[in-house]
Image 1 (cartoon, rainbow, N blue to C red):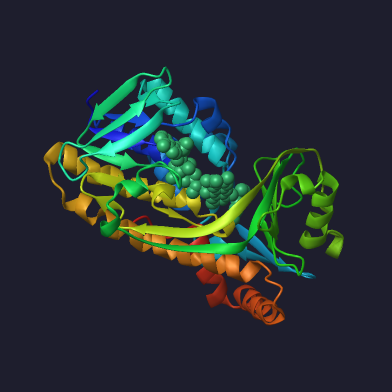
Image 2 (cartoon, rainbow, N blue to C red):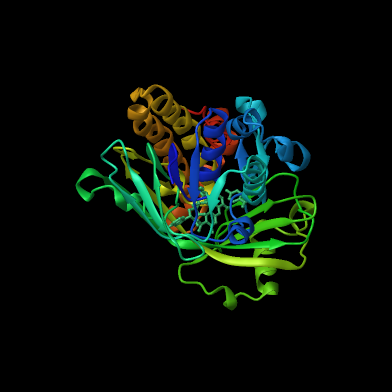
Length: 391
Ligand code: RFL
Ligand code: PHB
């Protein structure tokens, strides 16, 4: 097969890139390891920054957000006996939206189907070749077992943390940084109305807890747990008890509603960046180049921001053979990536307990400052609600 851009991975980065390229008259073929059903069912991020919402709307993908998204002015930060609201709209003039990655993925898949774009689901053995030439190609085995080859002008590595693109850059041409955290999140999805109008991030001596949501009738909640935790060691009642304690059930008249848990899993927490995000005609976007711990709600937004920069860069390359934006892509994207890496690490460090009493006092001091000082609150708000794409 021959196309303009071969895209590896049909997550949000890959499908949004295919969509934006098509709007600019550029053809692409997407190769995805998982089945379409598996990709559609994955439960992941839940918060969109206003810049991500603006981008999705301007790309004609805003209908679902209008119909089902929930605009939030800010978040609550709390520690035992104190809950404080940070109003991002008042602080920095921007809001965030609760709209699950599952819904974003569904909107992107629907747009892809409607346009009849080529997506090879269930592909194995994807491999990248001749990336340092101007005729790179990708090989893979399709779901029927047939060997395939895509010749392209560029390859977009949108294949997440475990795909082949990252390692397709020669080892002596890339650098990476990593931080593994000594805790994980146990996440649940429950068929119960949220007990809060906006997200609650809670510091507690037993560990961090987060109350998020997906709709008026579905709640998403998380607990800090030790690494290596087996989800089967946490019966549903124990999860609700821990959430009630950490989120402050019974304090100042607030109650946590519980309900049937429909999904539960343990997520490890990791910060990772690979640089540069480009090698020859290979461009990395989203989790293929970087991961963040979810405390800052940045993973999905970073993937969208990367693609918003990459699509015009590939457009100039394909239409005009102009490589200026393509050459600037990695440096431009990495400025925002490192800002979000820092913010995600900072939120994680402020809210997760380590067992060290000195750390606990520093965390509480930081939380008091962020909630009591206009400057502290505005710093958090500016980062959480999101900096402009290309910051
Ligand atoms: P994705 O969504 O991981 O998509 C990459 C796609 O590439 C495919 N792939 C391959 N395809 C072909 N050949 C191969 N060899 C391939 N190897 C992999 C994969 O099947 C997949 O479809 O990356 P993308 O598009 O960059 O999007 C990034 C976001 O998905 C990610 O940043 C966030 O979801 C991170 N994340 C969360 N972020 C938050 O902000 N809040 C959350 O609550 C949150 N929860 C999560 C998460 C990530 C998780 N992962 C990756 C384990 C929960 C989980 C479980
Ligand atoms: C979620 O709703 O899944 C969610 C929200 C905010 C975060 C992380 C996850 O910081």
